[in-house]
Image (tube, rainbow, N blue to C red):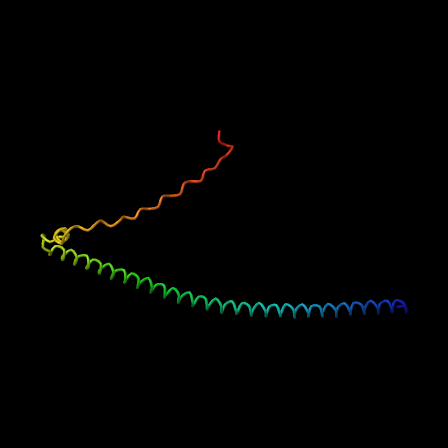
Length: 138
């Protein structure tokens, strides 16, 4: 090899080595960046799983409370209906046990002159509809 060829060969070999080192450093940076992204995504996934578990637990508790409320409401409604039926039947029994000669009319008539009827409230008249003049009328 000639002296010039040796110098060109040395420069080319140095450039190839420099490119190889630069490529290796770039790959190391990319690997470190992807590794940090991977860690960030894993951390986010762990947080999301923990949040999902908490929300699921709260939803289950809310479902239990709602179901208990539905049961209690049904129970209260049944008790109320039974109490109303009992009160209604007691009112019917007491009305049928009262003597037939006593009524509100005989009580009012025996107490003196009948009172004047109470005034009945009357609804106020509706306001008249506004009139408009339009050139579209024939």
